[in-house]
Image 1 (cartoon, rainbow, N blue to C red):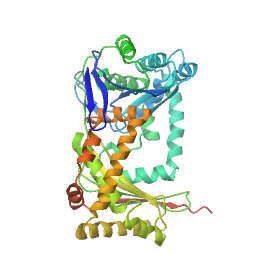
Image 2 (tube, rainbow, N blue to C red):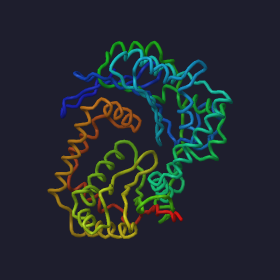
Image 3 (cartoon, rainbow, N blue to C red):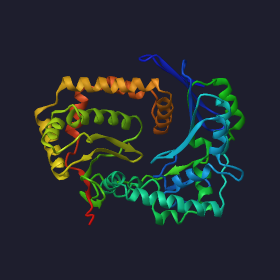
Length: 424
């Protein structure tokens, strides 16, 4: 058992490499009435090509299978896990992202009972031909719904324009064609590969008893042999795949995503660049910047405009999104502003204000049970520490921000636009 502390904010939590193979992260928070727990696997939508020590070679599975598996795992031959949670009063959910799948609950009572439910159903898959076929229709409807969602499409169209090979360019739920290839044997194969406890993390934050939690983990976690899981992240060209992607859908005003493609980073290097480029973009283009105020007053942008970093396994990008009657002009004005600031210099006082705001938001996150638990999962899966963000932000200098702008390939971008469809 490792106690991880941070003297800067006087906080600590426990990290345990459990005998079963799982990593357990426990963050007791005095004075809180709720507890929040997640059971997650390092398995997301981008993990489509993999092998273990038992496999003769790498296998590629249909896109969307991680999300499909998440849907099916709540059911067994007797009941649905949601029915069990309903009896305890807990609020439960699950999600699949690009790099992980997580099952979670939040409760203010019966924590141990809820933890037993969570550790139980996630370790007991039950798939049949009939239930798998039934789910294809449900997920197919979900895919079609997102295909008609302008906000969803403008984002994924941007990823498809930026990325040529990385699976981040594919919708997390897959496609109608890809999910049609999924059967129970494929689900069991992916489950047995990625739901090995050596590839999984349990995180608990809030009001709970550490000793009782570890007792339940000792009792219910089934020891797993590490089977040497390897996942292939495709080599991605440095330049964007396409400069432009335009689609017509039902919307009142054109939507846009502008994505700048960067080299891929990993671990602490990725986290450091995530913080630096978020601060840089807020400084150059954010809601308090001269640029935003000029564009807002001219009517080119409204308050829907946002800019930030989007990154993960094998990809790193900055994305500006919003609404505008002329998205191409927005891109042109942003490029001009970034080149101008590179030449004329950034405002150091404004940098200090934004860095302090970023630091304050990170510290404030430790006062929220849900954000603490989710941050523990995210940072563990990304290979960084829970407190690394606070230390990186506190130590970020004006020189770091200036260097980031100097190193940014301002013209290596893609624009995705959703234009209003002609409805006549």
